[in-house]
Structure formats: C-alpha cells, structure tokens
Length: 212
Image (cartoon, rainbow, N blue to C red; front, side, top):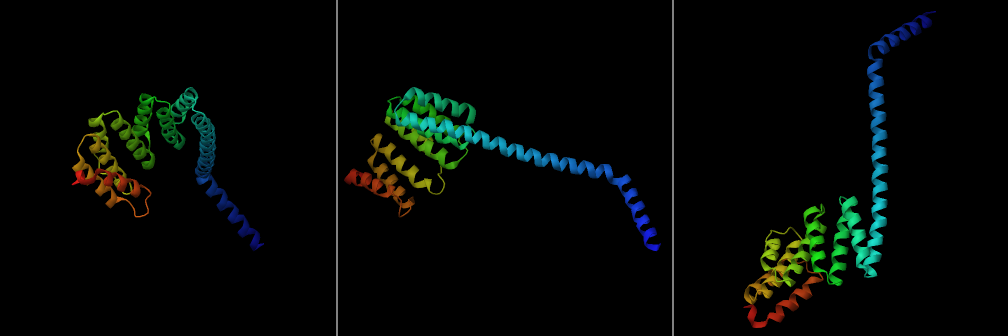
C-alpha cells in the first residue's frame, strides 16, 4: 500500500511538472528536430549542387581538350553564373583561360582570369590566377597593369613565384639588373625541392653579365 501511495505521488508530481514545463519541452524538441532536418536538407542541397557543378566542369575539361572554344565558353559561363561560389567555378577559370590562350583569344583569357582574381575564395586559385594574368599582361606589354598585380607581399610559398614573375616583367621592360635581383630573390624564397628553381636559374643565367 505504501508503494502505491509513493507511486501515485510521483505520478502527480510528474503531471504537475508536465503542466508547467510541457509546452516548453515540446517547443525545444520541435526546434531541435527542425534544425536537424534543416541541416540534412542543406547537406543534401550542397551535395546536389556539387554534383551538378562537377558534371559541367567535366564538360569544360573535355571541350578544352578538344580545343572547342565555343563549348568551353558555354560550360565556363554556366559554371561562373550558377556555380561561381564552388571550387569548380574557381578551377574552371584556370582551365578556360588556358583554353582561350591556346585558341589565340587573349581577351577572353584576360576576362576569365580577372574574374578569378576578384571572385576566387581559395588562396591557391586566386594567386595562380593573378600570376597567370600578370604573365598575359606582360606578353601584351601592359606593363603598368602587370606591375600593379605583382606589387603585393605574397604569402608563404607564393613569394618565390611572385618574385619570378616580377623578374619576367623587368626583363620585358629592359631592366636586366633589377630582373637579376628579382630572380635571385625568387631563388631564395623557393623551396629547395621546388621544380621552379631550375627554370628561374636558367632565366638568371640567361641574363649573363647584364644581371649585375
């Protein structure tokens, strides 16, 4: 009998507790369930977008390999417009720019690389696009614009690549002494096992006594 009374008292306490806090508990549970569902929904959506972007990126790569400039333009446009915020959009800029250069369309390559410099969120892609754009501008003798692109304190592993490209700019401007200094700076900044070291050394050696 004592057990039944104790059990009844616990039941009454539970009823009172639920009456006071039940709505709050249901609200918390509902919000948590919606949050989980939302998180899963976002994950599903992101995976779907990535899959779609990947498919278009493969189309771009195939078009670039086939040197089909029209298809490159179409695929790249889709990636920039619809998937520009994904890694595929950033990679597409580099692939498309190379395809345009191969096709002799330097203007399209320049526009594409400028897009990457302005929109890429990944340092690797942004700096790579910046360096390639500078090289393109040097070829076009747009020295002032190239100089502005290269006039930054490049972080970490990019320091050597920027110094090398500044050397290229100075050579094109007919300033071999300064170019030699830039190439030596590049050699100092590049990692000992960097494949770029041999190329930079060849450039420096090519300057001969003019490098000072």
